[in-house]
Image (tube, rainbow, N blue to C red; front, side):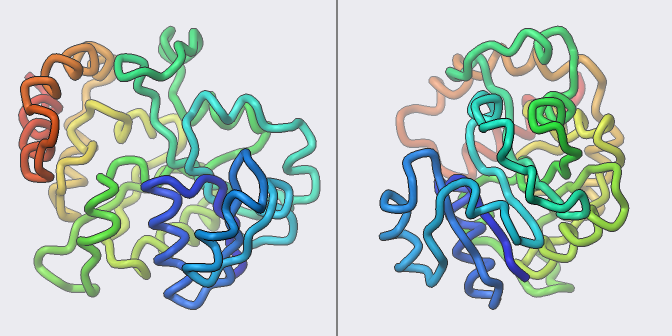
Length: 248
């Protein structure tokens, strides 16, 4: 499959590396242009392109950039991308940890619905509720008892299925997170978010989410993370998320 990845940070870079290793034709891009991503692309066997090159003629697009940066895309970015091409949003909104405020989301709009409005295209929400370390290091074969799950939400059944197949391919159990309007259940500070759940526990966590509760819990994060110290372990972060994110 031809896949474009915009953003080569901890999530985008890991996905590009895993998908290239799985035999896909991956193009990588960021806001700085092809020369900036070329060393990384050459290292993993991907193609360095600009943002238009990452979306033109591909079969799937992954956006792995800060949520506020999505509004800065040129209006023509997806004009040559078929409507059938899944556009995967991995972005999360974390104003308490430095993201610029987005009034519509603060007023209650679902994060991925806001992303979809900015792009003028439907999106699939995925790879946003797994820690980068887990994505890079904890993929397991299908059927493994310790296999972690990734929630996938969206309105187009075929597009969602294609993304779920990729989740499975790179070592995780895909769990249907419902429609895009329901993707708030996998946003930051919900029970499903970055807690290292398997598939069964992930389904229970998505169901347990309480609408409107996440912003209150997010407000506690700066203090909670500060208490973990300057170099928290993966286990520390997971334990914090599990204790803080589950409904009171």
